[in-house]
Image (cartoon, rainbow, N blue to C red; front, side):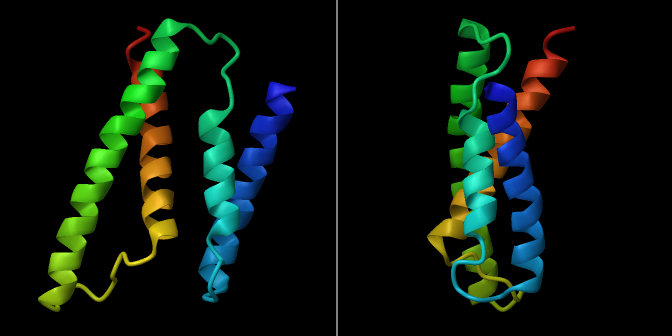
Length: 113
């Protein structure tokens, strides 16, 4: 069951990336956001206290880093240094969930050795 849900999350992430690239309409990021959320909350094969701690602390770190990136990018956009503004809450959530997943798996597999 967990593998099929994780596969659904992966399919939504991959399709969401293509939809986000080719469709600039409002709500185009929703498949990507849903896929990242499903991939992040799906249980691992061996779920223990360590993996739960890594997952929650990765979410905290990603939230802090994501908010810092949002503040810096807004300041750079105001001063016309960059042309991209992180203005949608969904874009912020995509950034935070993506970073949380990357941080979790990096910390999980690099600390296991």
